Structures are given as C-alpha cells and as structure tokens.
Length: 74
Ligand code: SF4
Image (cartoon, rainbow, N blue to C red):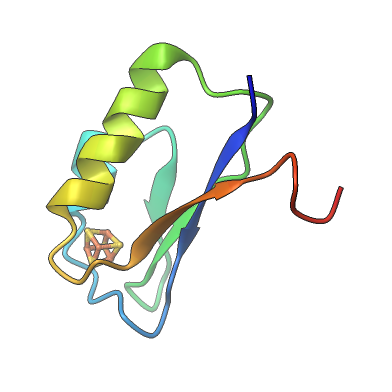
C-alpha cells in the first residue's frame, strides 16, 4: 500500500478550518490562518485516510491535495 501525504496550497487556503474539524490529527492552522498538513508518520490508518478524503471534499477552496509520498522525493 502506497503512503498518502497531504499538501495544502497556501495560496488558496482561506483558513476556514473545516479540514481541521474533520482531521485534527493531520491539519493545523498557522498564525497566519493558513492550514498546513502534518507529514504522514507512515501510512495513515483507514480512519485518518477517510478523514483526509472528507477534508479534501469539504474544503471550499479546493486547497488540499493528496500526494503519493512513496514516489515523491524518496
Ligand atoms: S478547509 Fe481548505 S481553506 Fe479551509 S483551512 Fe482547510 S485547507 Fe484552508
């Protein structure tokens, strides 16, 4: 199973924090009120993966992208 990471486009994010409500273990809000995503500590568990997908769907700015960390920079 490939590892899934998450990226937030800081240029799109408006700090609505919906992603943080849905997946607080992954997303956090900076002092600038732009969301950031934690790097995966290994493959996310099923619950977290579903929460991330919900956050991707819920983001009104479509600022969240899933990335395959097994093919990115490793
Ligand atoms: S839901 Fe989207 S716009 Fe809102 S804080 Fe999260 S990434 Fe930013």
